[in-house]
Length: 74
Length: 173
Image (cartoon, rainbow over all chains, first blue to last red; front, side, top):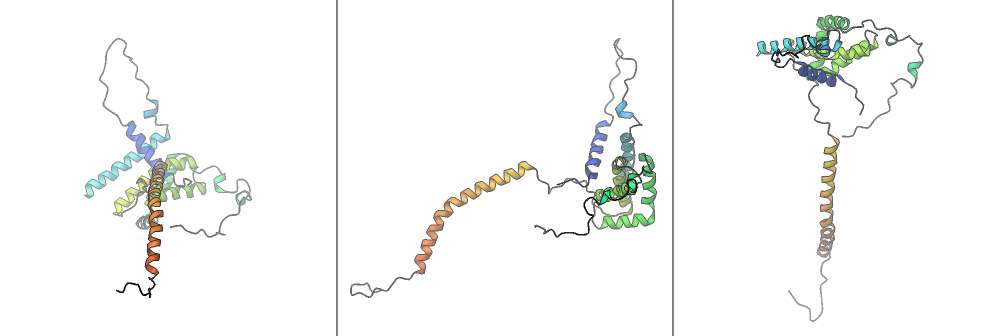
């Protein structure tokens, strides 16, 4: 059967990727001699030029609004 | 239940899309909005307008899933040359969330369309069911042949009444 409505798949994939990107526990700072001093670039994680990341932020904002509404409503 | 497909004549003829002049259709022109933000600036005011939002809520109350509504909106905009298919796909999750927010604000119950479809079965499950059915059928077939013959013989015996023996030596009841 041909796929006529990709909306659900797109939405679920975005939510999954958003959950994966969510910041986990911060790594403990190491100050050994061989520790890199420059921050490693997180091109994929925080690249605001990437439209997917921007869409993720919009979706996250609206979802938070919805949750607030649910909490206030109930 | 199988639905008989009636021939529909209210459809375009094969190749009809090629009869218009190249660039004559809106989707063959450069899109009006090229970024996600521009497309959202087009969608959000229209969704917030009273006319559209009441129609949207009516549609959701009818039980049409949010995903279908969002997809129809973005497909229509692609057809109108508002934005490209790529931007439409990017905008889809935001539209879904927005529509759900509008529905929740209005207190309308809706079907999101994001629930896993329970009607879709995977192939392994279907094969398992077929194997189970075949085994059961084999089991049923074997004794059926024997009992079937036996039952027919028995029924025939019941149907044919015993001829009354009228001999001198016949037993009287």
